Length: 491
Image 1 (cartoon, one colour):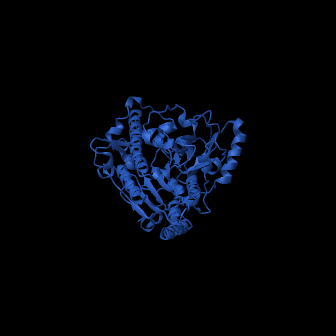
Image 2 (tube, one colour; image 1 turned 180 degrees about the vertical axis):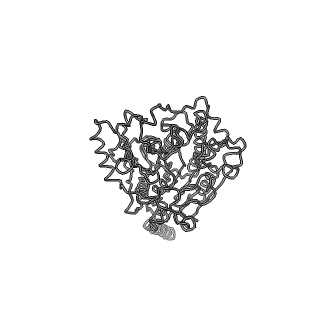
Image 3 (tube, one colour; image 1 turned 90 degrees about the vertical axis):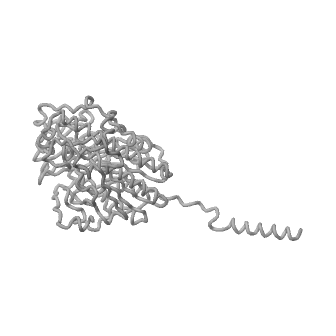
């Protein structure tokens, strides 16, 4: 009995010691949020989640159902490199000095901390697959393009048959323009999804999720579609009927209704001089390219879920700008109209209460950087020029009165735009000497009726000008790329 009591007392003593151990009963620290950063190239808001029932985008729509879709998100410059440099530095083009496709932001801002660098500096695994900073598309596919090498732990540059098999019989209605800015497409009957570049981007990104999902990560998956040329597997073309593809009507007075610079992004006007029937074919091909990249995004979402990463991974989906498909007779981007300046933005945060809602507040792509810093609890650089929209992720109907600013450059002549919840006001040249535009976005969402010369709106124009001049510098000079730009900053 004595031995039994001794053993019992010893067991109780050990239990007491264990229960008092500093590690026992301690609440396990919450794992930091990961970030899956998904970018697409030249995609407008022609998606199911934004009201286009014709376009097949089930996976992007699925992401919208698990996050907040921002129906009025605007780029700062509707051209790839200026927009992407702005998003990834958190600075407006007037600060980055990126107004073309050659100048690298580090030429003037050598010490700027980019969005991926912020995560890298805080111990995250940071990788890029495909296009994140600017790449000539399709010319730079498979290379580092105009990348920023110090922003990544690892970089991957897949290339598929849409790049390597360009001897395919691509239908090109504007052969003098070059494939990177062409009205050109090809329905690939032999190639599979994973043989195309964006299929390889998805493959590569999924492998990174599998390999690095056990520690904090920032993985950027940059897809190249729906940028032209529209080369995708044939099954995505088969989802559409050419007889159901319509072009926006163009009034005979269109060319006289706007300042000349407003329509100068498309020459010859309209549709780069091709026929309306050929333009309809190109519009179908563009929709097919959306559906193709949507399928690859679906593969990423499936991987996140199957790996159990959905519980602690923020997913951000964005396009660098919008895209014209015949509105006002325009095609592509580089205008100040709504179709060019507005772009898709979806943010999904694990555990959020308002999943599946749409936010109609005016936000900007430059807001992405401070928002991700806010959501992950990281300290961003003080000079960021956007604002965290985490409030809108919690309550999409919250009060929000910030406008959006977009700009373009036509040679040495500038165009500046301010978008509020009611109006869009554009100025061309110094304080509008080359033309002004004012549109009532509630009563005229197609921006067909320019109110700039209507005396009834003179006071409204003054208010918008005051905001534009206060928050948007007037003087802008584009940079000129140094000969060693790519070797120094990108490779």
